[in-house]
Length: 150
Image (cartoon, rainbow, N blue to C red; front, side, top):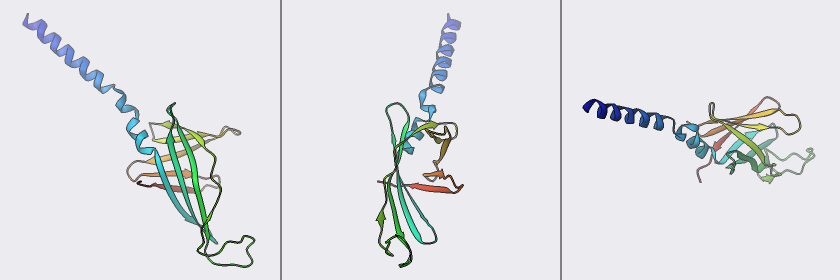
């Protein structure tokens, strides 16, 4: 009788450990929650400074909406020969970007956006250690967005 009770106890512990090791907590849901939020980026060109704000929102179907919600630029100095009417130190708000749908890839913590017309894929890399997202552009440069704590 003692042997069968021990067998049942060991079997129960084995099934319990397998159940918890295969639980859905390992599917990246914690990382998904940390990815959602607003991110800011700063850059500059020869003539202008830029500040962008990116928002990432989870959707009901497990994907993410990705959108540039603010695009600001400011001239570095006044230049009457420039075709735009930018004034140094004055921030001009640009157009809000369209909402893109991204799939989450848990294995490498990336968001993947499939382009509608070309079928190409934009890969946004999330760095959980420093709360940044790297978004490569078409010209080969990479824009780095840092998470904003609200």
